Image (cartoon, rainbow, N blue to C red; front, side, top):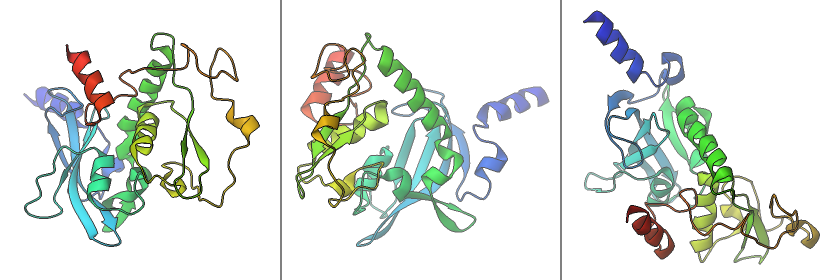
Amino acid sequence: MEDTANANTMKMRLFSEEEVRDISGLKRGCGGSRGGSDGDDYVEVTCGCTSHRYGDAVGRLRVFSSGFLEITCECTPGCQEDKLTPAAFEKHSGRETSRKWKNNIWVIVDGEKVPLYKTALLKYYNQASKNANGSSRSHNGKFHRDEFVRCTECNKERRFRLRNKEECRSYHDALADLNWKCSDMPYDEVTCEDDEERASRRVYRGCSRSPTCKGCTSCVCFGCEICRFSDCSCQTCSDFTRNAKA
């Protein structure tokens, strides 16, 4: 019995005690998630996102062994939002500078708000992203070339690299945002004052077949599990999800 208990403890221990020490609301559990599988181990912690207008939106973040992240919002007693992705929770909170959820979503460590990216909680998520990156390169011999989105304020085009699922989601959401602007760039600190890439540089989109390719069957993807999202309600993603299940 003791050996069984020890084995279960090892199975459940996604993070070492050192990695999650002093994180508020820490719980360990096992259960299915929308993006994980039945029996997926997880840790749960208190999290939040701060809006200058609305204040703190608090929630419960679950980090699954698969790398999947899921947030149940507790911003108000009657809030029905659960099983949110970090990006969706950030948007729901009313955060003004959204699309930077790794920076904007925080957990409480030793009584202080600490951005998620400064903790060990993204360890499994980052590993899953790397694996997705590898699979995107080998998916039918294709990968996703760089794309550009134009700022609605300065009219400059900004480059999006699509090397993993997270980067594809950032581009997907930016493209759908009719008011997208430079300051919404998810990874780089970019303002409308920054220079636009030179035209001679923009022709390089990352195609492995030809550096200046304008789009071919090697670098243009028409839909895969990396660039389509089951939690997105747009027509493109809905059609892909429906066809994938057929």
